[in-house]
Image: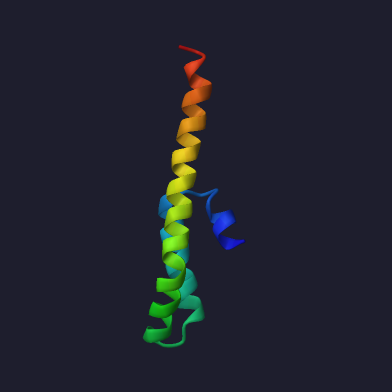
Amino acid sequence: MGVAVMQLLGFPATYLVANEIAIATGETEEERQVVNDAIMPKYLVGGFATVTTFSVITAGILEKFL
C-alpha cells in the first residue's frame, strides 16, 4: 500500500519517505539499516516508474496540440 501511494509523489519524495520510515521504525542504527535496505528499492522503483509513466502520458496528450 505504501509503495502504491508513494508512486503518486515521484522520485524525490519516495527517497525521503523511505528514509523517514526507517528512522521512525528502527530503534537502533542496525535496525534502521535493515528496514531501509528492505523498502528503499521498492520505493525508488515505484517513484521512477511513476515519473516515467506520467511523462509518457503527458507527452501523448500534448502531442495532439502540436
